[in-house]
Image (cartoon, rainbow, N blue to C red):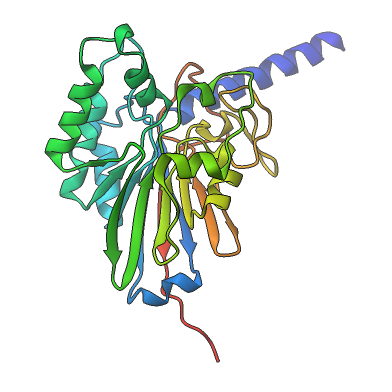
Length: 294
């Protein structure tokens, strides 16, 4: 009896491991729609592509599969929620740069930093001289808008939009610790959320969404959690990089009133090279014109 149970457990483990390895080879397109009163000023549907946590991964030569998939979506805007590279002294940033710098040929691109970009910035002595500066210069030359606690104003039809790139210090990413971030901290970084503009916030870590929401973010886009590494149907992601279990926002879009957060499950992996029930993804968000019904 016990031999049978042990054999069954081993078989299940091996099948799960094989599935996890298989999932690392593919990505999917996850589509959401958003329709809120602010979109009265949209004359037609607008599509946003959200990318996060590539971590230097390549899907085909020069990421051709990934680029082709994004082109087919015909986006109006590409938002990057950080961690496209790997912040290690042995890792190159070139793979990430080569991919991201091809995106402006598709549509405007706005990029907010993640903890791996922030690590290069805060600890330059650990990396090749001027690596962060070179990465930023490469982005700028290609037309990517890299926002470090900066904002950019755009228009989607008649809708004025402010894209905010939030940069939080590395201490807010420490493992086994829960740091407090509130709306006042966000204001200190990027100022107040002007209510005459639709506020899009690029904020890598979704753990602090209550603060983003209180600050005034209409649409927050995040990543960082890699979907929780393992996802359990009905429960969502299992664990965060800070080792917290079952995070509230880990790989979905949540709408609360007129405010929403979209969390990418990411495109790559880091440290734990595993996914289970948790495909890498490109997120496509369709903004639908709002028409009041009589």
